[in-house]
Image (cartoon, rainbow, N blue to C red):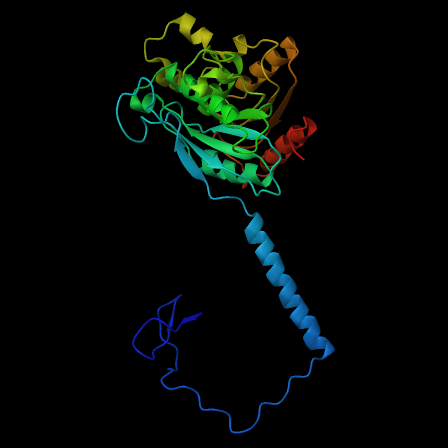
Length: 339
């Protein structure tokens, strides 16, 4: 590709490499000395022109129906309650990933990246997830919630998750979302946050001055990927517990946030994924939650894959385990959440 506008007068440079080609354009080309022969429209030429026109139309259609660029908004526009400082990490955000208009199905998911309640894996458990959900026609809201890395303890992260669900529900019409099809998806400690939001929620405050606070915070469904669930031995994740509750948490506090003990019949339907090789968060976490859901009569599906370390995200490079997004999509479709 060559750029006729750059370089010295009359000089041509590549806009890719910056190198000059082995020729220069310095003078206009001379007029032809003989008449230009007429173009005969042969069958082959017509076919090629038709192909070019079709390709142009397809490219235009692809551009028109592509997903919108993600947009980041403050979760608390008037300032986050209980914040300890200013800037990123103290002002939680929602990054909105909207699918192509002709693909959108009205379902939304709040995505909670993992990070042990001490950080956030916003790429492979955030951005990549937003892009994947868009391919399913789902509008994704990647939540950057506050955590122990900035000295925020429970219930601050849960308050941010509640606010995210309320925001999506209160503004559902703006984003072309069905307010009864709003789920939550969490990885690792983000899975703990998602399961906490699934077991501790409310119907909103009807007399609140803020209209967002008037709507309910219960997710309609949940997807938990290698989640932290329990803070009770022998399967506890001590690092997440310490970052969420501090170093001096009591047994009662740990039990209250061991979410396998908090499941009720009102807990939303849940898809769970884990691997047998996960040494960071043992698969017993997902098993305990699944058994609690089953006991409470809540629809649930559990997939435990043989291979894979903790923190795989979409697991694109892991044989077998890479199938979990397809299994999750099938579960979502079976629940009427996909077209």
